Image (cartoon, rainbow, N blue to C red; front, side, top):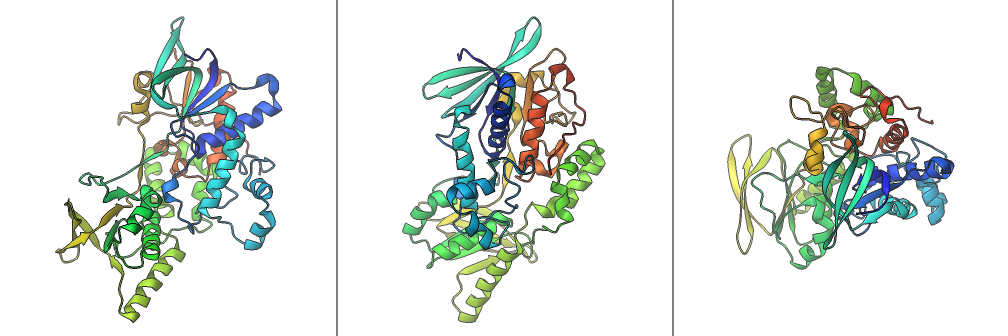
Length: 437
């Protein structure tokens, strides 16, 4: 067991907990007498954020101003603009006249930030259990047990924050294999796929990742038919208009949190076309141009199967045979595929599964969901003074922003503000935090 008692132990080290580590770093530098002792545990060997989806020409869908700090503190030296200055590209980026950097560039920005707070991170640590620790009849700490190779290391914490990210969603009948996989593995499998000279690759899904996967495979596999299958009649454009984007404003989280359950459901339904199963209009138009050019030339490789679904897939030693149904008529066709890529989105991890024994001190709704304060702290039973915070998996309480980057910087500031409050003042009420603008 680690001999140190930490003020905060973070589980997972993706962008959300990275933003929190930066906020802690800045607090500690400004307030050395009140410095927090923190450690973030990450099972990967180094920082990485969906590396398998880092397509070379794919851009971010959020403005660079929604980086890890700017919405919380525009003067922070952890901003994307400071990163550009450090990399010697600030003037070039300004001349580029874009608000949306390459995804690979933003990942490099994340790595740049992660390197600067590396003293707070223990890589190669997979958390296997979280245990409540009683002192004088109160749960005052949590012991976080992490696997380090063949050994187990225990970290004792006054508070913990869980940010383990999303997990790939596959249809229940999809069996992952060398030929069947989720698009999160795209760039990891690209070389081997190209070397196998596939005749047909099938992509299932209607969202941004699906469209990007189709475009990437169509570009990099010049001898391959790329078949896209989705139930809609066409790719639906994302609504990124100014008024619609207000659903991602920090103030919108306050509104959502205090709304009734009926209003929350309504807001989530109204906002789905800002993020879920939608595609940037530029990419939709590019795919249509490609398909139309092939119609003109008579050499069709981009095979769009709209209003369709995969009803059955059978893998043999030689191929995957996918049955595709055209929904308006019920007509089916069996396609012989060298690979099937499911770009079917992600699901939040179950925080209670990860917490294990510690979940017994948490309050749940009648539907089994977590009860959370506005400060992202799980409501716990009486006599529990140690805190559990979550980043992600709280869409039902905080709205659509919890799984996106838009509010990451502000959320990190809110959690830090809560951590710095006395335990008796932490209640499940709206916590309004002043945001520097």
